[in-house]
Length: 182
Image (cartoon, rainbow, N blue to C red; front, side, top):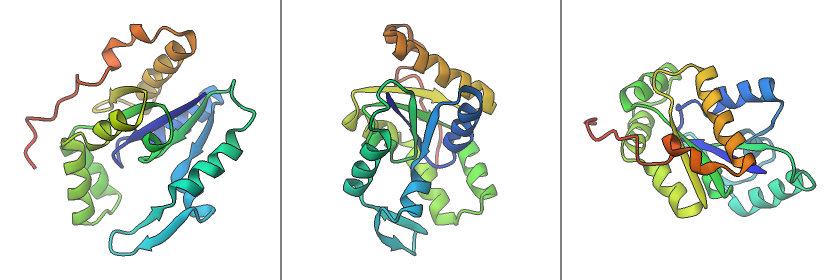
């Protein structure tokens, strides 16, 4: 079972997925690392300090990696995961907190502004709705890695048990950054 863990950069995807890797021993594919390590991109955008992912190459490579593992929980961690997985969990973070995290990482002002605006406007959530069959969202604002991990575990356990109807608190639409002015 492939579960996408997506969200704007800085919302906690990598930290919480590493926590789940250790705690639950779930297979986590850190897609951004895989893209860079295996050159699954078409070009390098030096201005934006990013690579342009080759989605067809990525899909082919992921099919090879997960082949024969249909009964295992596999988490695909990346801000691109919603373009690949049918079921995704979108991590969300209040924009001012996201801005502080990205500043701490040393992102450029332009990149910070782009990501904060994307979060405020629900860009990844909207894209997830367009691409995925099932979408859940978690507000990571003020939560520890462990607390966010527990939320993800709860969602995945309910999916495995076929009881997704009990996950109303994680259905998209409860998080609203409308009061945030960029």
